[in-house]
Length: 67
Image 1 (cartoon, rainbow, N blue to C red):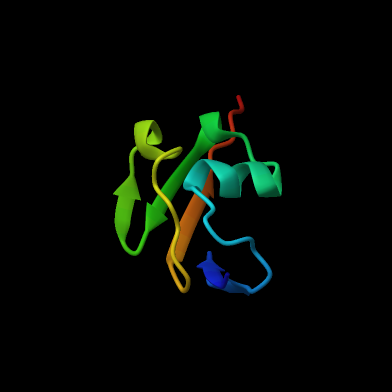
Image 2: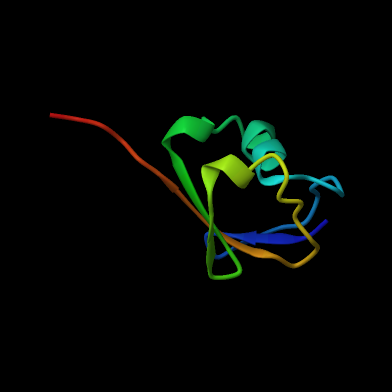
């Protein structure tokens, strides 16, 4: 499957990935991530049931704490 993530092409992703599956695939923690799919924010409660489609465009933001 082909996805565009933060403006970069990713061509070798498995079909049928959910948002949660994609985050796990890259080893990104769900807890500190915000995801926008095709210009719509995906609620954290929908990560597991939101299945990605070929050519979806995603913006993924990782929040970092600090002091």
